[in-house]
Length: 320
Image (cartoon, rainbow, N blue to C red; front, top):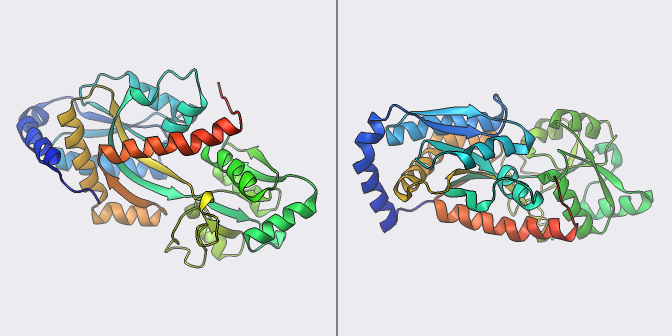
């Protein structure tokens, strides 16, 4: 939970001092979403923009800039004027993974000012029920009987789902091969029909299929159970804390954005995420509130450098 500090009170005072120019400014704040319209991230962004507009008295609009694993949208924000009129609803993929995987990328960690952490969500370790596997030890035994690498659906090279397969393979000592897909629904079909052996999709994508018996979720990549799937254990209780992983969503601004504006936007974002309406949307979409200010986001970025950076280095992964 975000707690006001002396710096926070100073920023609040700065926001009050800026309130007249903010309210009078004809130029709205553009919130760039590096994903297509109509999906969960778009819905989160629109509710966030509405709440932040109410908190600051400044107009916020959402602009969807999908493509290239989030690079198009993130690049636009990295190049934007640092005047507080452009923000990015970024995440582990568009920011951390792209930067760690792509040496030629035109932006880096230092291209952005951290504004606020918003929320994160877990992955699942899921198999088709016809495999006859009900636990991670049974999965290991099954893999060793096959005499071939097990296949898993991923959202492309360097995605969280792709990299998580490498983590699972090394932790359990079983060979895995990624099968890339352009969309989750296509990957889900191949999981249900048994064309693939494994999936690391989000719980929300699988909850109904799990209840119908069409898939078997062996574990969540968290240290706590999901209220929507109370019967599914988490990896820490299964004795595999090294399999804990998540994907996060946060708010970024161009480097050089005035500190008073960054702090004001952080407070507005945190208050919005902690409203009942936003919390209900998080629950519905299987996400966990992580609302906190710039320091929390900086800590997350550093954690990504250590966690995902090691996976990438150990497996010698470099993308164009």
